Image (cartoon, rainbow, N blue to C red; front, side, top):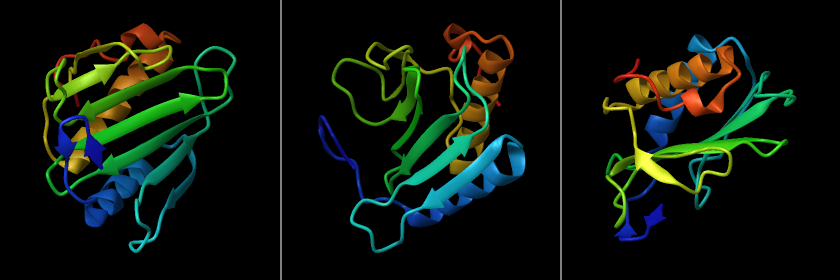
Amino acid sequence: MTGLLGDTGPIEYSALGKIRDVFRTAEPLVIHHSLAGRLDPNPELNVTVDAGFGSSACGRFDVRWTENNCYSFHYTEEDGIEFRFDRHPEPNAPPKHFHEPPNATARVPSCIEVETPELVTRAVLKCWRTALSKDDPSKLNARSNPP
């Protein structure tokens, strides 16, 4: 994964497997998941959930995690809602930051402070579930140090 300040390290495939397992066991709305093969030049985990904001019937998380503990949990919906929880070097934002909906362009500090793949995944899911229960994407980054 290459960031604005250079290489953030190779993808950590075992972390993607752990993240996939958390999605599968912790989120009952997961309807599909796929993990690119270890030899894929840019492996990524894709997880589709059977819920969305507004009139969207479903959403998708595209997840990357590197050996340098940089990550991206990028969420998109067909109706246009998009956000992203990231950790990587960024010249105009803290290393842990949140790209706000509706189009994931604005960057603000992330509410997620935890570090491990499993806990970050649980935190992202907690933030998503909280906002989804209120059908309000502005609540995505409003929690205090989830999960």
